[in-house]
Image (cartoon, rainbow, N blue to C red; front, side, top):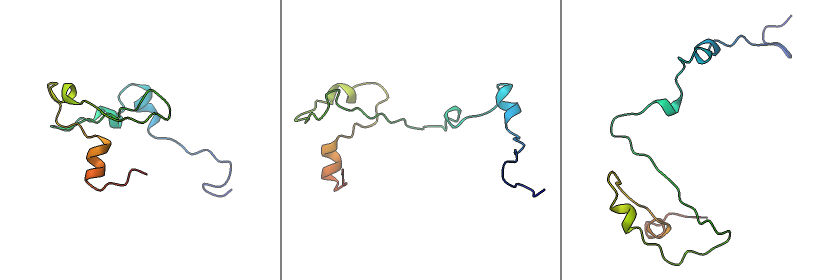
Length: 80
């Protein structure tokens, strides 16, 4: 029989640590000073956002930046 042929199971070595709860996921890794992003989308399908007040978001503790589609367009980022 061929090694790693068709229809052969492969012994998985990572299962035990995940079943015991000791496995690490990418979401568990938090480098110092890491920033997190959030994408806000319009709750209305096919809506055109004509203005957006981000001042409340900017005033929140820990917020480093709020980047809008207008900011990306101004930086010549292709949005399509």
